[in-house]
Amino acid sequence: MEHKLLSFRQLFFTLLAVSSLFLAGTAFAGNNDFKLARLCTGGDCASAQALSDFKDLSKVYSSLLAPMHFQPAATLGQEGFEIGVESKLSFSTEDASYWKATNKNGDKEPSADGKYAAPDVFATVQLHMRKGLPFSFEVEGVFNWLADSEIFYVGAGVRWAFTEGWWFMPDISVRAHVGTMVGAAEMSLINVNMDIAISYTWGLGGIVAFTPYAGYSLLTSWASSRPILVATGAGTQMESVFNRVNNHLSRGFVGLEFKGDFFVFDVEGEFGKQVMSLGVKIGAAF
Image 1 (cartoon, one colour):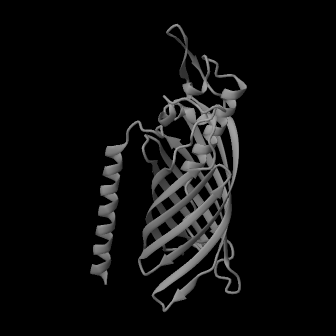
Image 2 (tube, one colour; image 1 turned 135 degrees about the vertical axis):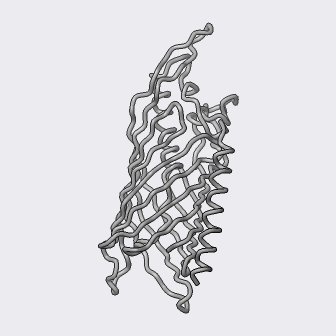
Image 3 (cartoon, helix red, strand yellow; image 1 turned 180 degrees about the horizontal axis):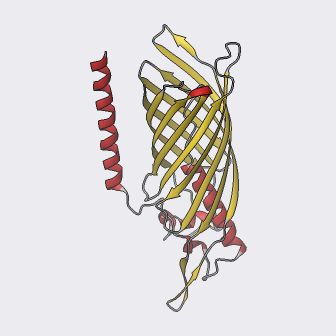
């Protein structure tokens, strides 16, 4: 059994290393990167439209980069450790003027109402690690990459399952998570996520356990721009900034986890006002 477990670990971490090298080698300025100067018309970054577009753009990227829950309410236990590779596909629910900031729409003309088409789909690939602690606490770390871009996200969180072990009740947990966007030269973005989840686990023949879960998440973000160069006409440029904005996003999620002795598989859906996501997770638990 120990030899089998060792081989599984070697295979799993080899796949992780190959994935990391692949991501590192394919990061480039892609369609999902953005230039904030495109939000400024005639060099004016202080207009009501430009300010509104910056706020909405930062809200969307905050939601795209924030990690999905990808875990039932129960913790891993004091000695438990889990590592998983996760991917989510996100879909914007609206066409809007702020999409002109993306490289995909940088050279396109807006529609008659001044809006640009939202990208068809956003994909993220994420490495997610969890470690159980005493008293039904758990800590996590995440690192993800937004495909077709140079944008990454790094975050960490802590979770407490306050009804864990109460046989007559489902597991209920609360989680606090904080993270930041890296790789976007023009925008500073910090996420703070608070959520609550509920789940109940059933066993199948003592071999596999499956756990449906659901919950609510409140995502708060702070975004501002670093100095940007804006064309003002006649070949001249000026330096400008977007001041800090604060966003609040409410999201609901539902998921299902299958777990064997060492293998974990999750599917999850997340629903918000501007962005909806569907994700899968493959991992190993020790």
